[in-house]
Length: 172
Ligand code: 5GP
Image 1 (cartoon, rainbow, N blue to C red):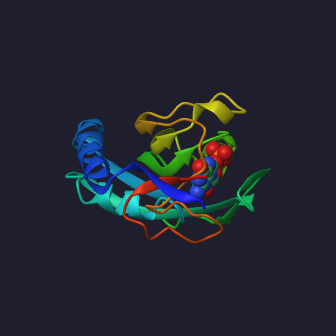
Image 2: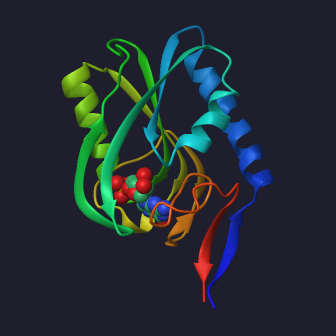
Image 3: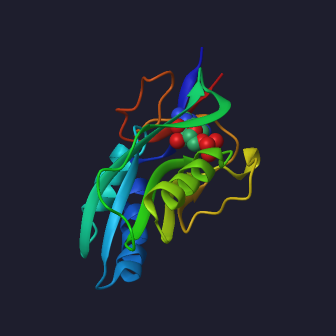
């Protein structure tokens, strides 16, 4: 019978998110920044991180679609676009996991081309280097993980399990 193995507990996530927030607060400094969540998987991470930010920050959201039945379709499309004017502002995109890198490649092109964004930083909770298809590096990484399909804390398994307060993966 398959069993859910815990990879990062609530306490692990809380500790690491506070550490990342300190660095992002330093980066933002006295400037205004737009903190963008890539829906839907980033939401729990985004909400916890956002509450630790201390500067002049605004929320915004983008939604990309790329995965069908837990496999990368290789195609990324913007299903929901930003609502804030980000031109000339510091932007931090918050994402649950950096896997092939195709989602970020598409988001970065979109923000630069359609929104005139100059400086876009990337903050991911999880970095899965094994499947990378393009050169893509996050500015802040919560944890580097091995090649597991992970779920919980926003990450889904066919849209379920996003509500788990920890991150885990299935074992046989
Ligand atoms: P990328 O475009 O970098 O391959 O993938 C980014 C998106 O793929 C993530 O936002 C997430 O939706 C999905 N993804 C990649 N790896 C995993 C995984 O291990 N678990 C889950 N639940 N989603 C994943």
